[in-house]
Length: 391
Image (cartoon, rainbow, N blue to C red; front, side):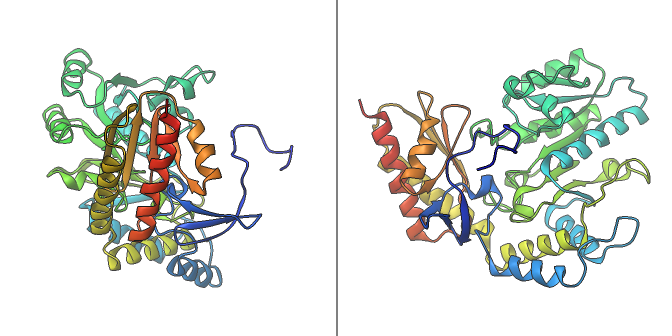
């Protein structure tokens, strides 16, 4: 490793040089089963032929022009995403944080046009929306905010999965113009809200004239068993953000909108140098095609349940296991104690996992996982947890 990288990552002592499907190989030839998928990014696994082909073919033709000009692949990508989601328009950028910045700016502009002096967005405790100044302010984690004060004004916080708290804020704060929420918390520990939570937020937003904005950066693109997690309900948001799996590792983000939110941005209000360029858009189209052809939303629903059931069987009556929960292929195993050391232990066992919210083993495997690989994850992670919790 080099001394010339900033020290903002606590990196594990492994370096990967090759991947195929759900597997990675390090620079010493050791093989690892990837149960993290680049943190929900590589949903098609590594070195997927369709993604590789799109990258190579498009790179040989045209990588970048500018949003000053028309981009055919970008227009097609917007059409595909809107058809899948029921949204009406799309803005493309390079990351989830940028997608959320676009959503925040839509809410601010919407509020200002209504004459609200300090347009305010309700965000949730335990949420994660990014690390730019606005998105880390929106994030409900004091640890990532510390040292970056003064934070951005215009946010008010409510407990996650608490509709009454949102109603109380509505009564006491006339500056609210939007709610920004994750359908399932990712960094917050795979928190799955009550079945009526999103529907309740939709009803409050409709009553108050607020925008309902969903951060689907981790939940989107088939991860939860639907193309988008909101589709488990009968509501549609006004704004939805995507990134991560949209490019399967190639940087691309999207902010989708409908209704008045889709009409809020006008020329000059927002932009991106690289966002939705020919290469990024072509790759994202290949990802959508592959997910559609492979019926990966349905696969995520069935395989996620299989893995979760396997953990519940393997870890039944193990003292220290608080809860095992999932939404499709977002799987969390909550323990009764901090367990970050499991990440390093898993690497030694040839597995890639993650620990979030201090006590939750978070698994986000590629959606192309086969049954044998899924069973290997169940056995490997269960063994690690049993040994970790052994008296």
